[in-house]
Image (cartoon, rainbow, N blue to C red):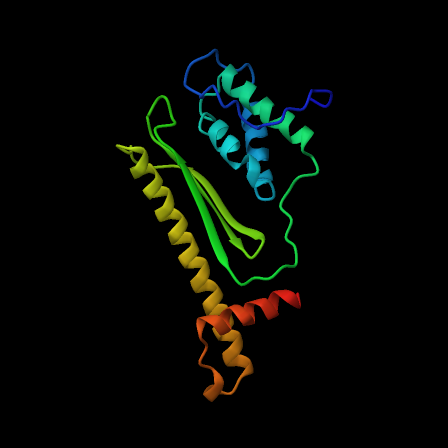
Length: 195
């Protein structure tokens, strides 16, 4: 794979992976590569969906699955300088984006949803996951994706609120510890700007 031609996308947008195809000759190699790619998703959220798709077939990998795994490796070769970069920037907003593909799995008809949460300009949380139930419409699949994004954003907001409140209580007299949401964002900005 060191001399392979790089590709511009981690997945083939026309084909969906299914249970068909000849079994791979070395399933241990497939599992090892897929597992290594799972660790790479910590700093490469752009491959999270593709890796999630190939990991669905680790129990019984087929040749089309191995071809998809090789495509991810070819994509990584072409984008070796990409990754998760956290820059110093204003952190006055917590913004989430979500999306879902309705009935994207050809064998179970379940949808895959994902989200990304940004604190200022930095991506701090992301997920790409198969939905546990079959959605009856694209709107239902999108609502489930939004619900996951809202749950994550709420958890992160509460975590930030708790962190800032704890910091304020430990550094301010008790009479000055009433913190509004606007002041919370100011304190978060001060904390991250000085980091």
